Length: 160
Image 1 (cartoon, rainbow, N blue to C red):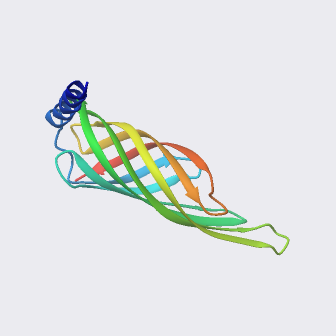
Image 2 (spheres, rainbow, N blue to C red; image 1 turned 120 degrees about the vertical axis):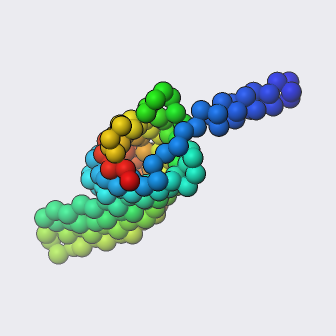
C-alpha cells in the first residue's frame, strides 16, 4: 500500500512539473469582483520561476458613510492545460482597514487580517493580454471581517 501511494505521489509530481509552462515575467491590471474583496482591485503578478508567481492586490472602496482598503498577497502555482489555457492554485493572506459612520455620531473603525486560498483559470493571448477567472475563499480575523467570504473575480492584465 505504501509503495502504491508513493508511486501515485511521484506520478502526480512528474505530470505537474512536465506540463509546466513559462509564464510572463510581469503582469499588471484589474481584478473585478466582490464579496469582501472590495470590488475592483489593482493587481500585479511577478514570476518567481517557470510555473510559480507572486500576486499582490490592492482593493479599496469609498462611499457616503464608509471607506476602506485591503491588501492581499498570494503565492501561486501555474499549470498548463492546453496552449495558452492554464489553471492555477495558491495561498496567502493580507490585511485591511474599514471605517464606517452611521450618521448618528457613531464611528466604527476596524483593522483586520485574513488568510486566503486561490483557484482559477486563465487564458494567455498571443498579444500581451491575460484574462482570468478565479475563486478566492478568505477567512478574516477582526470585527468587520470575522468570517469566511467567497470572492469570485474576473482579472484583466497586461503582460510585460
